Image 1: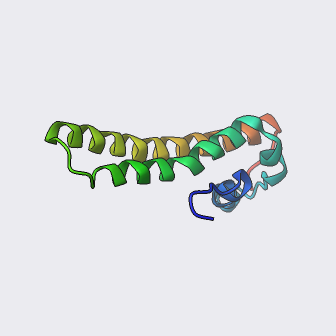
Image 2: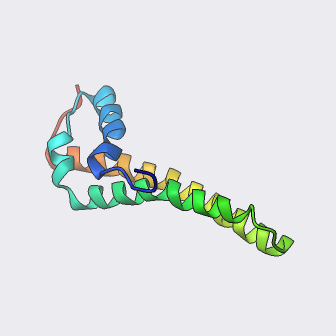
Length: 104
């Protein structure tokens, strides 16, 4: 459905696969119950929609100053997407350490 965010496990799947490929650690079960990780996944899932809404507002005729602020917000949303991806990867590493999982 348009505008609807994907569920957190779907968002985490590429990160879990990336972690598994790098370490051989399957964190799927741990990730499904970690509230911090699920919250990060919800944020990550929502940011593209926010960036899209911001981008749509730049289409409207407006003052140059307001347009500059809107573009700045758009870039901030994209930066937050990258920062959230880093936080998800870090949280997976923390989960692995906390549960004494060893890399292959």
